[in-house]
Image 1 (spheres, rainbow, N blue to C red):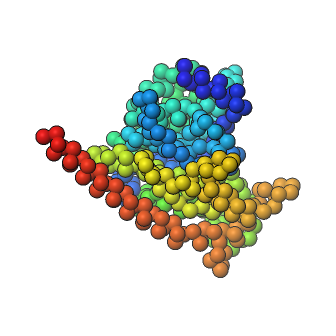
Image 2 (cartoon, rainbow, N blue to C red; image 1 turned 90 degrees about the vertical axis):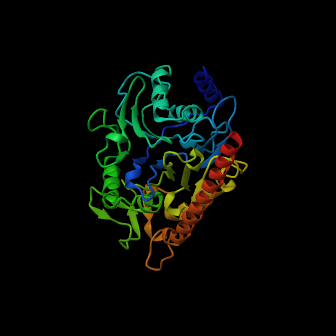
Image 3 (cartoon, rainbow, N blue to C red; image 1 turned 30 degrees about the vertical axis):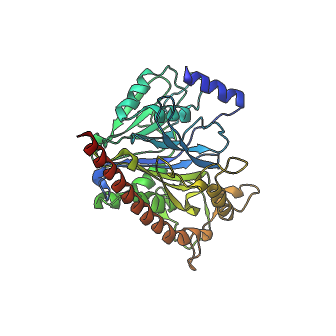
Length: 383
């Protein structure tokens, strides 16, 4: 019932939230530097104004933090997020699952993810949701999920059925998806080159078992490597390159990593690291559930419901894609990101983001100590 009401509300408001493209991964704790699982999404969408919001618990539903479009005034569609139970979800659009099934009421992935964030605690809960929601779902996506128990999976989901790919079954301890589904029609969909880029760039980190959130936000989302051409343009010295089949794209609006917990830790230690706006030009921020868990500049505080931080990054991006006539928008001025003088945005932000990660992990340690102290005090009172 709630699903139908939300769809009706969106239609009345003229809000049609389109599905994302994106590059993504789910990583087992056995491959990470601290044993905590990771879930990453480099978000690609034509809606360039994104924001982060904390949604309070209400009516028996859980508190969560998620990425929203600025124009979605009612926070109807969440595009990646996590909740107080340590459950996290994301999606990448798929283009080879549904075929011509005749379903017209589509692009409901974000709505489904908000629904899940309010209700699901585990990967199994989400699978149960997919089984019981009325069909057709109005989706064509690879939904990635992790939970506080260390579980993770992709659910390649169409209007009427899904196929689950469990992280526990992944031989290397990692799963990746772009804009096609492994269970879908062969050679259809998109993102084949980007997925090969991703696997190539992650390969040394998989071997070293040293994957961290920074590997995604500072490396993959800021590297201009094309696996089909076999060239990394990142520090090539070129001034202009064509924006085609890199992980960071002109329509990339955020690089988001959700870092889970070690089983037994407080789920509130689940952390979302986000480079909001065009990732090569963006600072990194940590986010948590609870009071003061989301920096105000990430939220929709302007008259247009924009994030101040996203607006700032979008202004920088205009220097990277300055040509607006003809096919100019496809041409990227790489010297604004990397140059011999070291003044490119990626170069300038490298140290700043390392410091942001350092401060973020110090805050996680502070919160861990606080939660443990509170837990011990509760046990003493209950004796």
